[in-house]
Figure 1: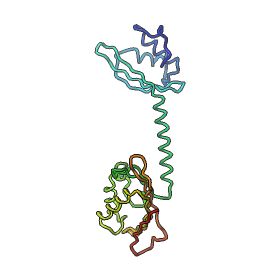
Figure 2 (figure 1 turned 90 degrees about the vertical axis):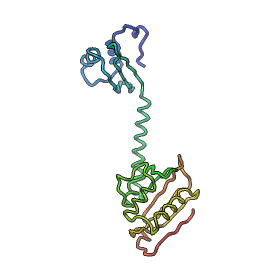
Figure 3 (figure 1 turned 30 degrees about the vertical axis):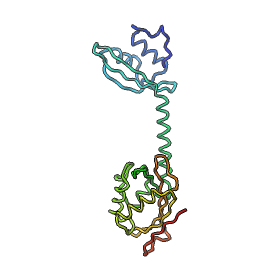
Length: 224
């Protein structure tokens, strides 16, 4: 990890020498070298967990624990690859968030156990839902209850609508529905044919402007 030879590290090697060796390898300390060395070689050993970065891009997780005799036990873990994977994942998540939140449709994914996996802001806004109560892991039934509170549901009982939504979610066929809500808005809702990983299925919803002024109850379901 630190390209040390047997002559450089053996029982009795001063900690100061090992620290200076790491500094020569490009350890970034953000301060004066002498003060850094003294802080780690003088006084009692205290517990510490830090992430150390080197000039060559490596990232090392450093942990030290004090021992009863006054010494210390330190571990060094190269986490460069893990940190890079984490960075890439964060970047992809950021790109995903941008993509779904710039869609013209409301989009949501529910897991096989009927819990929200992810949704975009347009989905929340279309149904007038409180953003702080619609998060990953929220049960579908709870979201339906919120929709009933604001009237973003068709003229059906909770039990009827919950059964219909469950039937759509469990269907092996892709489903399209045009539904007029109790609050007067009309939406077109579609559920994908193929479940994704974990059994969740994507659903997208968009305003159906051509039917928004309809006064008759619309409930039409078609199979692609």
